Length: 452
Image (cartoon, rainbow, N blue to C red; front, side, top):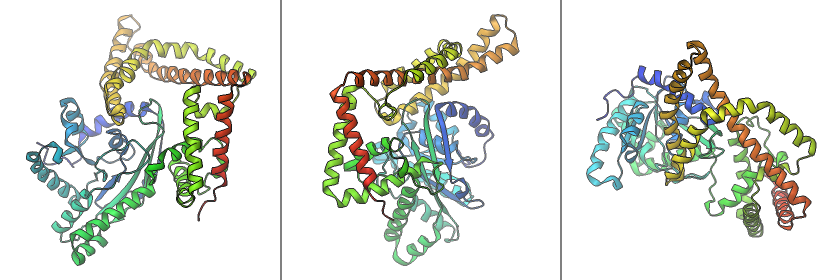
């Protein structure tokens, strides 16, 4: 049974949020937020984000604005008692679907009443209009939930409520990899009052469709949305090359801070070209297929192909720098390596839905990391180091762990480039072919004129 005042400011939420925020911040290398000035002040509003990555998407909203928004989430994620407890702390209410059983659908009435109450009290609210996540930079069709709730709020306020829908774009450089990048963009709000007029003049069906389509359009402007799912692999390849050979194609609009806008620029460039030129489409499909196959065969990443050969001086500089870091990275590995392996390898292998891997690994980190921090303190203290040194050593273990992770990733990239050197020196035909096809792909992209 949900609380009657779930929307009210919660001191428990206020205390727990920064503590959970530490684990959330450690999850990402960078968190880039734009458009926070678009969030309305003094008005009721609904956040309407795209949905790509399980429960990490609500957390992206929670930790990139100062509010305590109420969320709706599908009811099946409440099955675990531990998950349900965490979700309720973060003001997440369940929504039941037909697949949950017809007898469960009646419970939604209580949820919808709470949603209307939240809006009438000018409290922030969040609902994912796709009602499901998709593991690609593309949106699913939007459902009717937001228009339905908006019109319910309108009806109960004699259509005087100045409700705003805030489109939000969420993007990840990788969905499940530790220390990836998170990008969030808050778009200009959509006022609902004009759609109240459509509702009163043309009926609920037309008003619902109009508001749903408007929200879809505005969320698409705020996020990375590839409409052409059939040829999605071409866009994926273009995205990978975006910073690798396409520097001159980046838009100069002042939005470079958030890569979401650069991705959008590339989509706007590719979409009409692929739609109007079947020969170009087939060429890029063919290039993409061959690039993917050769990369797998050679075990080389797009980053390595972009960087190319590593010189002797670069190799020496890298090794010397890593040698300097060895005390720090080794300490981080010894102290935190086992915990990382348990969370990010032990848990992830048991998760069937790839878009829930980061959700469960984050949940594991949220439970185990604080316990390990406390445990470290007592270990150091029991060794006779004293309270203050024990606190200091425990806190230092966190950056040491990050250094250990980054050093490990740096060594992998280094060995990849050394491997590239060996393959090039040996005149490996498959590598030369890969470079040739990749360059052709880049040339084709650079030759496409951007429509204005």
